[in-house]
Structures are given as structure tokens and as C-alpha cells.
Length: 580
Ligand SMILES: Cc1cc2nc3c(=O)[nH]c(=O)nc-3n(C[C@H](O)[C@H](O)[C@H](O)COP(=O)(O)OP(=O)(O)OC[C@H]3O[C@@H](n4cnc5c(N)ncnc54)[C@H](O)[C@@H]3O)c2cc1C
Ligand code: SF4
Image (cartoon, rainbow, N blue to C red; front, side, top):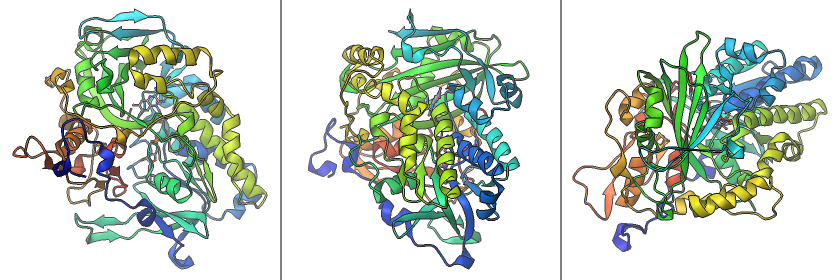
């Protein structure tokens, strides 16, 4: 379909312009290379984020007590493949964490020691939730159940991943950073490992002077811990039909900043809008914000502030980055940031479908953990503790199989269902969907679901974000102009992420490059890193060319929800988050 056969403002859905990708053909490798050309490991974990590293640490703890099984796994019992420069480099969260699973994983550490290690910033003791009817007004409301955070801990997942990496290495993990896993290797209907990506290719894929080909990594079990919309996870879902009878996954996009501020904030704050979003259901905008206090080990006062928007919206000019900049000008926020300095920025998508959208979590030879398995409660904006718990349960499932000489990992799905992950996600399984009817009607229905703690029967459905017809609306008219002190443009924001993608790297973003303006505008506004451009002389209506400045990409993954596809870039490319 194209503008030439009927596109007009408000009638074009991104799924009519699918990305040029055949994930099963391109991202599934049929069979391993010869034995002398591959690396053999015991368990391969793809993704050194919270979930993958929890799995590595739990597995090594179990193997540490069982030298016989450890021995059978060979020289490299556990390998973690991470595309960022270091673990943590690509991880971002709000991040207020329910502490239980981390306490269980590292039982030797107190919460005071978490803070000394530099990944935790204090226990939540006070909180407040506001409605923001206008750009000037805020109204405090009683804290709705999902926003109750007493006793939780403010952390940084990028710093936590660095700590988990150190612990895993001390326990014997082999961590391959700057390495993308680009293909899932399948032999006789079973996952037998992954292939790492080539390095040193030029713009058109040609090998450069420093070219290094990728390698097959053979494993007895593979864990996909790739986070939101995983590259291999997507291919595995198709290959093994893991989404059969589930609701489609839907996505949200969050943009976050960390500020150093002169005055400590004494409470955790959430706002539920509607400003700066539009309340009319025509715009399909649902979102909210957080402001979390953080005090670091040196006693400095920091703030985590962010804006999350569901990617179900219909106004192409919706931009999470600009919404956050605009939100910072509200008096409620401005007084908190007054005299402060922005020290970090980042963006990331998260899976929002919850329980019904979780794919089947096991396939022959492999498991899905954390965001790869969709384990986020977006009512409460909580995924970190589920990532840790699911990583631990995956480790326990794999260990039990290895110990008994079995290759059957199918118990994992039930173990997740029976755990705190399954129980908590079940309780809110129908709570988020009503909000798509708009804040007023949807809010009441959602409230009923929450009060019932999941006891009301039924299965609320989701529909795909890329099936939503887009129109070019006026959300953009309210965005503030960056002042370089409190509000910033996209490019200066990307700059402070330490993004290090080579200018001559191959393009890892797959989108159609000649699309109706509604689609091009959707990508242009949505992308927090300013990757998509529309030439100035492009026609106002009809099809336009899209320029893709892919070296700016911070790998947030949002494009995959709205008609494109983020594939794995060369290992080491992308941002280097420190405290997000
Ligand atoms: C804006 C935002 C706010 C949030 N706020 C909160 C909050 O306040 N509290 C809370 O509990 N949860 C929150 N969440 C959810 C929570 O952050 C996530 O559930 C959690 O961090 C996901 O962890 P993960 O390990 O599954 O994935 P990730 O942290 O995404 O880690 C995946 C890792 O895999 C690597 N990787 C991916 N593919 C490959 C590949 N093919 N090859 C090599 N490496 C690969 C990535 O580089 C990354 O390091 C928030 C999420 C977002 C986006
Ligand atoms: S191009 Fe990169 S940063 Fe921009 S939306 Fe896509 S994945 Fe996110």
C-alpha cells in the first residue's frame, strides 16, 4: 500500500509498511559449523542485563556446590554474550525495585552494602502521586495501589549490571562483551547455541582491514535474556511458534534523565497526566512520569526523572523525549530541578502486554527470561525484580536438567507461573488494557481490576501497536524549545550517552525508506535519538523519502513497535550508560 493508492491523514497504519526482514531466514542458522571452527560452552546466556546476569550468578552458585556437574560442562561452564562495551552499557530503568529477588540472589549482601557498591540509592519512605490537569496545575491524589512503593529501593540497573558482571566473573563466568549474538543456531528442531556477529564491516557490508568473522557458540542450553524485543527472541518466537494463542505484545517507550540537584527530594513522585498528553481518545495517548530521589555513596543528591508513553498512540507527533522536556517546565518539577545539572540521558522501550502477552517461555534447548519473556507489570512499572527471579528460576531449571543428564527444560514455564513472577503478573493481567479506552472510562475499569486483585474473570485483549492508523496531529505544538539548561534537544542528549557507533558501520535499522508522510513523521517524532529525517523539500502529502541516521541510534527498540526493526548492531556500538 502507498500514498498513491489511498493514503490520507489518519488512514495509514505502520503495519502496511513492514520492515524488509525475514527473521527466520536471516536470524536462524540451520546447523553448527564444524567442531574445530566453533567455541563450545556449557550454557550460553544472550544478554548481560539484570535477567541474564541473575541467571549466570545463580547457575554458578549451584555449580559451585556441585563440582562434578560443573566439570561436565567443560572449560567454559557459563558464557554471557553482551553487545554493549561493558555489561550495563545498554541497560536503563526507572528504577524502583522490589528488593526480594535481589536479596535472594545475593544473600550475603545487606541493602546498606548495595549502596556502598554504588548500584542502590536508598529505600523509599515517602511517596506522592499527582494529576497534572494543565501546564501549571498539579493535584495530589491518594496513592493508587500500583504506585505504593514503601520499602522498595531506588537502583540503577546499569550500575547493578556492572556489579552482577563482577560477581559472575569472580564465580567463573566468561563474559564476552562487545559481542552481538546475531543468529540462533537450530539443529534438528532444537536450539544448540548462537552465532556471534562479524566485526569490522563497512557501510555496504564489505569487510574492512580489521574484519573479524563471527563464531558459532555451541551450548547445551541457551538463555535468551535480550531485554525488550530481542533480536533472537523474535526469531525464536516465530521459529517455535511461541506466541500461539497469546495476545500480541505491546510496547511502551521511556525517556529518562538523571540530575544532580542542590536540595534532596524527600519522596518518590509519580504523575498520571493528562498534561502534557491529550486526554481525547482520538490521540490514543496513555503515559505518565516518575521522579525518584537518589543519594549516592558520596552523599550527593540525584534525581531520576522520566516519561513513559504507550506506543499505542495515534498522533504521529508524539515524542517521549519532547514530552519529558516539556514536563520539566511544570512548576511541580521545575522547583525540584532548580539549580541542578543534567548528568545522564537515555531511552528504552519496555514490553507492556503483561501476563497474556507473554510468549511460551521454553523451547527445545532454550529459555526466555526477563523482558525477553515480557515479564513486566506496567501498571506498577516494575520489571527488575521479575527479571532477577526469572533468571534464577531459569538457572535452577537448567541446573536440574544438567545434573540429571537431561536436556528437557519444559518445567520452566510452570515454575515461572507458580513463582512470584507468575502470581504478581496474573493479578494485574486485565488491569492495563482498559486504559486504552481513555483515562476517564478506562481508569475506572482499571481500578476495579486492581481492587479485585485479579479475581474478576476474563481475558482482556490487546491489539498490535503497528496496526494503529496514524494521523499528523498537534501534540507537537505544546513542546518546549530547548534552552540547553533545563530542556534539551535530541542530539545533545544522545551526545551525553557516550554513543560510539562507527560512522562507517553497516545500517542495523530496517525500515522502508519511501513511505507516506504519516509514517515518516511517526518515526521522526518517536525516535528519541533523532535517527529519522524527512528532507526539507519533501511533499507535504503523499509519500516521502526517509533518511536514516542510524549511527545516532541508542538501541531503544521502539521502532520495532511502529513498523520498523532494530537488528543487532556491531558489538560495542551504541550508548555507554553508567547510572540509568
Ligand atoms: C523507561 C523504563 C522505566 C522502567 N522503570 C522501572 C522501575 O522503576 N522499576 C522496575 O522494576 N522496572 C522498571 N522498568 C522495567 C525494567 O527496567 C526491565 O524490566 C528490566 O531492566 C529488563 O531487564 P532485562 O535484563 O530483561 O533486559 P535489559 O536490561 O534490556 O538487558 C538486556 C541485555 O541484553 C543485551 N542484548 C540484547 N540482545 C543482544 C544480542 N542479540 N546479543 C548480545 N547482547 C544482547 C542488551 O545490550 C542488554 O544489555 C522500566 C523500564 C523502562 C524501559
Ligand atoms: S532508531 Fe534506535 S533510538 Fe531510534 S527509535 Fe529506533 S531503536 Fe530507538
